[in-house]
Image (cartoon, rainbow over all chains, first blue to last red):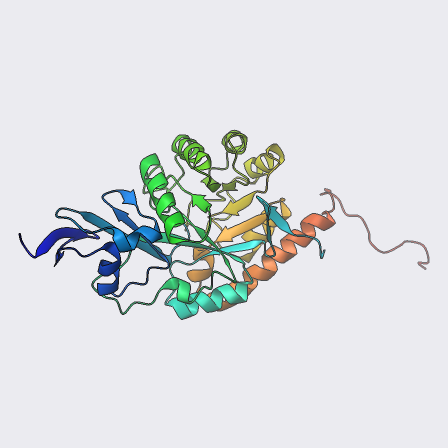
Length: 72
Length: 257
């Protein structure tokens, strides 16, 4: 078994250590869990789920936050 | 005027000026402009976090959610599905069930797709959201939005970022008389008089972004808008005099030579 999983994070192809969780991913990317929302394969995760949702091959992760904007 | 509070869905707001956070030079200017404007409702957009460059600050490090009501929007969404998805992401990232719902019709006008708006609002209200819809200056659509459970409506004055001011004051007036919920005029304000006029017509609040952020001096414009909204509100409550074609002297004739 390969030691990494191939995933997409915010549209970018990435390889991450097998067994890593969403919480690990956020920590590695230096992203604070407060103020972000994480969508894993179109499912919005509860913050309490970050620590026990492991990343699998082909996963698509979207990490979203608030930015400046009025209307668009 | 001390009791002149704006209440929406049981939440009380001190300021009748609401502001967006886009188009500023940097977060420091954003923070200063908002502080000077006196606004206590601040709209934000939901976007992907930049995962390659983590040197960027977070907007909410500058706009304290304890001090301001953060109102996430679905800016940039053209379909019901996208608007619902972004609303759910905003709720997951944020602090409340409030959402400023935008379902846009086309890129050139950024006019709302009101059919999509009503559909998305229905779904989100069912999901427990407090939906503040960005809508057209159409009284019938506004009534429908209220009927399905929107606790306020946000009609445009003119296209987003156009600065044209209130293009259809009579529609806006009819809209305000048609609904029993607060009306927040959103988009199209160009300068202070536009904001004052919206308030004089009876708007409960005004939301703006570009008029402040795009001004040559955003901080001074933020201050101008604060007074404009305040003056307009006071004038509305005081009641303007009727318009007459001919003069009426304001000094007495009695006592003249």
